[in-house]
Image (cartoon, rainbow, N blue to C red; front, side, top):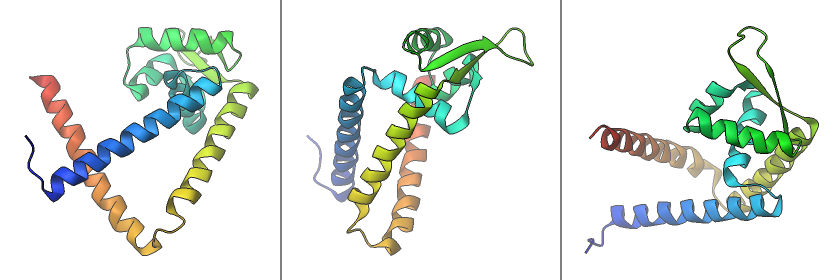
Length: 151
């Protein structure tokens, strides 16, 4: 049984926020005929532009084989194209199409709307301290997960 402490409450809230965000993404992906993994891949391309498959795998923290499957489906649906990398013959460049860019733009618009709705009554002067605290928690969580993977 877990003790009832502020830290326990914060962890519970973070878990709840994470689940709500994941559910919202899953619902959006389903409405769009996608999977959350494909949405993440398109989001990465939207942020950084065309990139080699191996860099996408690293960015998404998945295997190159997983990226190949995701790109296969997104190429079939017309969201991305594959081409030979201009500087590296061994590498495949994944590029969003106009359809992929339009999808990412819709996703960005939804995120902008969520930001407005979520923080409309939140005092602006509290956002930066919250960002700093959440960054610390996020970095610590990454450290703990990385350490657990090594054992």
